[in-house]
Image (cartoon, rainbow, N blue to C red; front, side, top):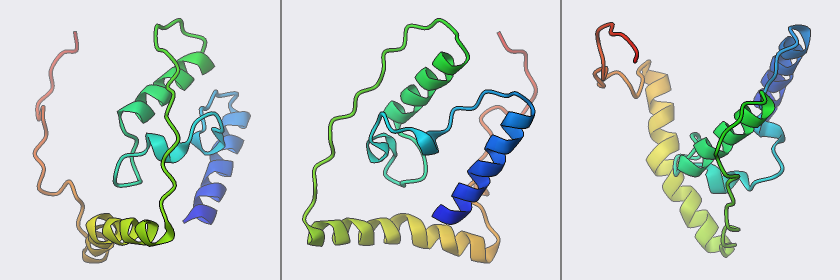
Length: 123
């Protein structure tokens, strides 16, 4: 997956360069420990991660804001056995169901109803 994401990110950068677009690329962020801003599924950001990205985007586009930079304490280094156990739990809890959904042509959102199914005005 890492190689595919690297290629995808390069395409995004090429398109952004071609159109003079501003991008905020988490792939290149070195100012925060990525594992500390990821949710337990290791695919989505946690609340600190969303705040960090919002801060980075607002800074990149030059919008005044009151967000403070996020600081994430260093994650504890787990012994090899505990790392293996955590990875095994993650595999059972997140990876296997994700692969199963892909193989069977389903999505995790198939059984979820929309919060706002109809059009409404934004205030």
